[in-house]
Structure formats: C-alpha cells, structure tokens
Image 1 (cartoon, helix red, strand yellow):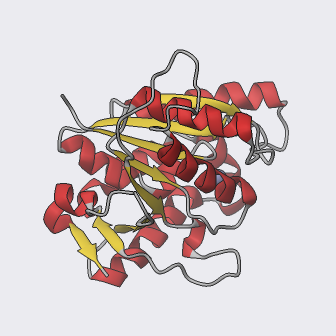
Image 2 (image 1 turned 45 degrees about the vertical axis):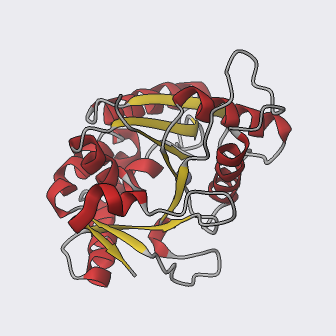
Length: 251
Ligand SMILES: [Zn+2]
C-alpha cells in the first residue's frame, strides 16, 4: 500500500507557495499526495462575489493538485472566519481519519494572519485527536497512529513579529521548481492582479525568490523549510529525511 502525505493549509495557493516542491518529490518517490484547503479562497478578489470567486479558485486548486495526481478537498471554512472550536476540530479530525496519512504538513503556528495560525492549531489537534475513540466523527473510524507532522515555513519566512522563522528541516526542491511553479501558476485568478500591477509574473517570481532565500540557508538553489512537531506522543523520527535522504538538510 502506498504511503500517504496530507497537506492541509488555509487557502488555495498556500500549499503551492509553501510545500508543493516537497509534495512533488514525495510523489516521485511513489507517495500518494492529498491536498486540502480550509477555505475556497472566497475573499481573494476585488470584483467578484463569494460564490463566483470560490468556483474559480476551487477549480484552480483542483488543477494544481492534478499535476501531482493528488486528491483535493475544500473543508468548507470561510476566509478570515477560521475558528478554533469543537465543530472545526471535528471536521479536521474527520478529514485526517479519512485520508489516514503517515505524514501531515500544515501552516506555521506563527504567521501574518490568524487563518494560518488557527489552521496550524486545528491540524495539530486533528493529528492528536485522530486516534481518540471518544472524539466522534460519524461514519469515519479512528486511526491507530498519530501521523508525523511538520509545520511549513511562514509566508515570507517571518513570524507575526516580523522575525525570521528558523526552520530545522530543509528540502532541496531545485529539481522540481518547474513543477512547483506550474502548480502555483494554476492559481491564475491570484496571479492576474499582480500581473496587471507589476507588468510581470510577480506571483511566481516572489515564490522563487523565497525558495532561493531558503536555498541559501543550506547551499542549494531552491529549498523549502519546515519545522517538525516534536511534542509528546508525536513521532520523533524525521520522516522527510528518511524519505528524501540526500535532498534533506537538518539544521
Ligand atoms: Zn493563506
């Protein structure tokens, strides 16, 4: 049976910006890739209604996932209203149980907006709660393990105070930067206004600049940075390093 990685992030394009290179490498290693966003990105527009922009962005997210032959699901939250409460936790626990992954990647616990930070907290609890039989998710059985969990880099690599995030696991994504770019380019509605303002594809360029910046941390062309959740009861082995071996750098 194939190993499964599940990336859960807040909005369509967060996965592509923060960890699509690593997902592409795992896909090449034979892993099954599952992608989920909390919201449909319903506030990512200046002109369209929630319904109109959601339909566009859900299709863009599916197109990006298709590049890795990955599943994609939107978990039904709304932009800027992600909340840490019981119904939200049950939703996340249910999704983690359904996919039953060995590896989960989510957002940085400190980032520029609460949607990101609360997603990070919800996924942490979702991983821990997946095996607790008294956390009920009707129709979906508990899983028998806590998946290994990694926090991706924060957007622009900085926390809510502007301080640089110190990642401790870096993945050399130089060989898959074109795949990551293609996945991000699937989010045409988000790239478009940057193109209009800057007259160039700033969306892709800023992603590449950050990947170069993380690459410099470990002496490669492009990298993605992560921090593993190593709290009590969570797996302690560095599964990214075990799988991606010489493409992984530990700091
Ligand atoms: Zn986001």
